[in-house]
Length: 482
Image (tube, rainbow, N blue to C red; front, side):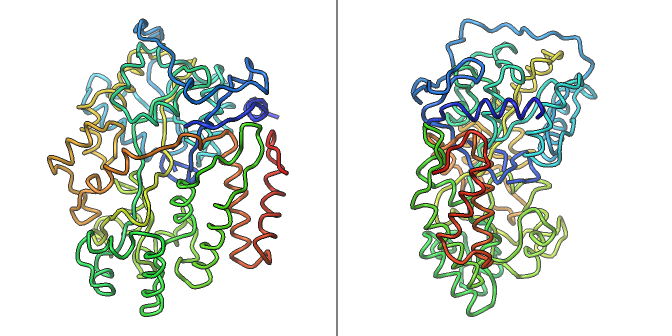
């Protein structure tokens, strides 16, 4: 058992309660992996090495410690380059490009280091990388497993060590600060993004099949799940086209709106009405062809965006920028459907994933690390610049409001539409309180594995599906399944 597995075992045995994840997304390509649902227990425990398994802490106490008196950068400046670790360069390489262009003195002094090919792989491999003595300054964490790292002082150092105070992050969305705060109230990670999502649809097909010429007109066809299903039946029956891209996409919308955490404060698996409701919907959509049979993160998933197999995708903010999922689905610039999509709010508000920058205790480039974190998570002006540079929904409401008010964002992938104006209100409503646990990625993998067997007829009934789910969930160390 490697170091991380030992750490995870300790963390998993702690009492997990309910307070507030999100970035980065499902085993996704962007630093938003694990079609990441997110939820931080409302009652959280102290780190494994310090807290008895039965000791919990209420959500209202899980706030960053008052470190406003300390603003000294304690990190040495002895390294040659700032290393930023992640499982994909899709975000980090763009961040480095933007940062060094604005700070030419740092050109050639910031490098992306790949660790793993998916978020879940990075979760396992980071610990091995750190133990090997290689350079590590900053690294990216994902919502589904951020708790494993920020609650382990071997892997993460307080952001106060870079000279930040909690006041520096008052301009961020509150939920991102809450998620980046460990069980002792210490801020360990800062996110550069907020991740609300919507329904991204083919404008040409919407006009031809539904007579919808604008996003507002399209929203009337998808503004609730009943309406979305009604429209799905219409386009399938009349035009043999699926309304939704994948079950994985639908899952992101549904899992965000789940009311309960997947584990209670006693580490017991929670199976509620959500499970039955979602299973029924998934089965209905699969059997009737309202959703395609493709899987996310495959060539087929992108191809359906060009061959008229689907009306649209459930995409969040990090799916809509340069080099993103939407770009791939359109075939890139000059592709068959390039610019033929718009975004609308869809049947319900939701968010998908999210990514956080964490500080390694081994960091030896204190000044560059400070400036890099500040550029993307603290400074409103540079955050705004990055939002426009990458079409990224940044973690600064003021910056995003300025862009929306100015009308300065025109997304070519969306035919010039400003996705920020559609998603700005949704971002302000993101609420992860009571939804994140340290078991999330494993539980959700087990649940979706059972759902897949159910819709494909490999298990005969919903009850059999739940039995399959429990069987897999029982393998998760520290989780009680009854």
